[in-house]
Image 1: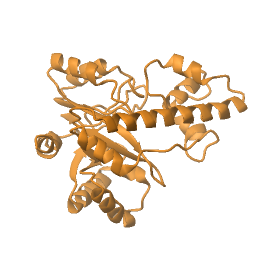
Image 2: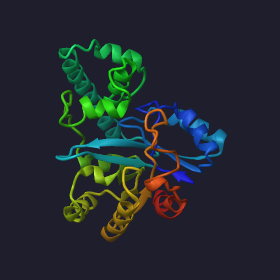
Image 3: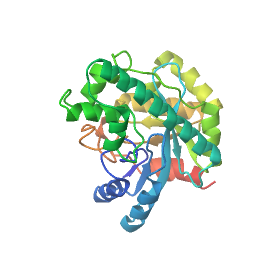
Image 4: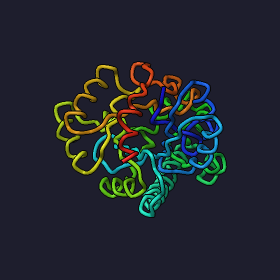
Length: 281
């Protein structure tokens, strides 16, 4: 098995990068990509652990892209040397996160929740903070039962504490990933919130902007949807990837490392036939 989409404590995952690698080894995963949100802070630790575990480590990241509806997350897979432009984009996105966190906390304070941004940062040292960490705080105070409840009640779009934030420009992010020796891949494309009737045209425009891969297989999609996405992606010209988007059992109990849509094991073909040939070019 392989997994081309996972998260560690460097962003909003349950496990440290080295713990994640050890868990992957225990699950007999041979290739693992670490794609933390808007950061590459976990790469060095994960690489060292992967050498000991005998796992092929794929350095990656997941960047927020400016998009009018839903979410557009862009994976950068197989990063070799981090370009100045990529680090600038990551810095911009982290600053946007901090600004957004502050605005969300202001809304929470107005509703009587006692928390400051500084306290949230102290509770999560060294992490790329975002809404999941605010959700975890709400869980710790027993205001909600779990992260998903926090989003459903307070933090998701249309909820009382939601605050929008700016994302990176798509073409600039694609160039930054390419300059870093990586491959740009659109993550969980159904999160774009584009109807199936319009998805062909939208994905064709994204492909024309330089995105090379499409994560057709993701646990947020049904098997039939993933099959349809793979067929559509290949027709447009994308290569296809698959990932678990694993954050940890305590965070998303429905997601398992090395498994994707419908709980299916992620096949080696997504590495050997899809991504690896492009990283070797």
